[in-house]
Length: 173
Figure 1 (cartoon, rainbow, N blue to C red):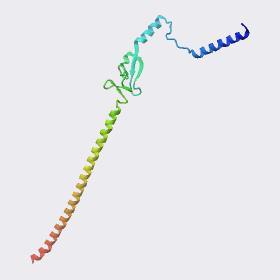
Figure 2 (cartoon, rainbow, N blue to C red):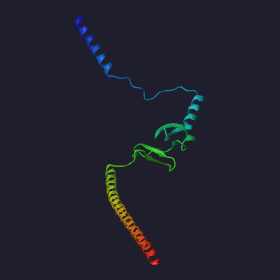
Figure 3 (cartoon, rainbow, N blue to C red):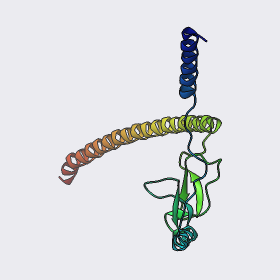
Figure 4 (cartoon, one colour):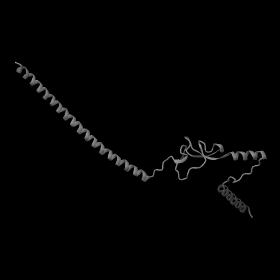
């Protein structure tokens, strides 16, 4: 093997090594071995037996899985059972003791029906408003006519009273 062949072989090896180093990423081990004393093992087991996962739901957090002491689970703000996966944006109702959707379960057809209901209610309200306006106008016109009639009756009474006063002194003589 000559010098040129050796250089070419070294270049090929470097290229292969470089290609492998760029494509192979280091991965975290799936398991880790710990060496613990008997006391440490007991402490870890005690800790694991005292803690469990629960779901926090309060004013700051709608629904979050957290590791908490077992004695806190089921008490505000930690719920033992998870929300139903079909619930969108779940939050826990502590009064009724159940999960609900904060975003609501209103669908597009329900919204369309609500809009139609509102439009028909608005139309009915407009019709009632027009009828009430007409009735108030008629009452106002009736009141005005009544006032005119009352004024003409007062004038008539004054005319009659005035003619009786002028007729009364003539009859006394």
